[in-house]
Image (tube, rainbow, N blue to C red):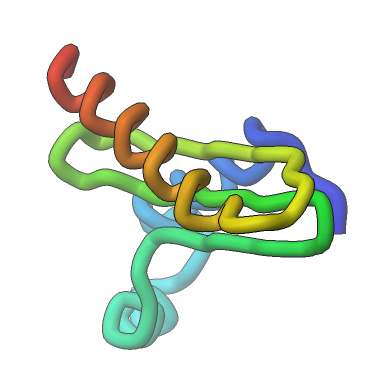
Length: 88
């Protein structure tokens, strides 16, 4: 699957605003999942989350080279979110 940050943001926003699923499907989705997705492949990581408190989808795509890159990636994401939230 190929997607840009804009594509992922559009998809998550459609999940949040109810334009993707009907009411029954939305209820099921809300009961089993969060509005987020993370991914990890050799050389690549992604984090995409909807943050209700600031009504924003925050997406981070990262090229990696191994090691302890997942925890570093999460730390950077959290830092970015704190900056966004502070400026909200």
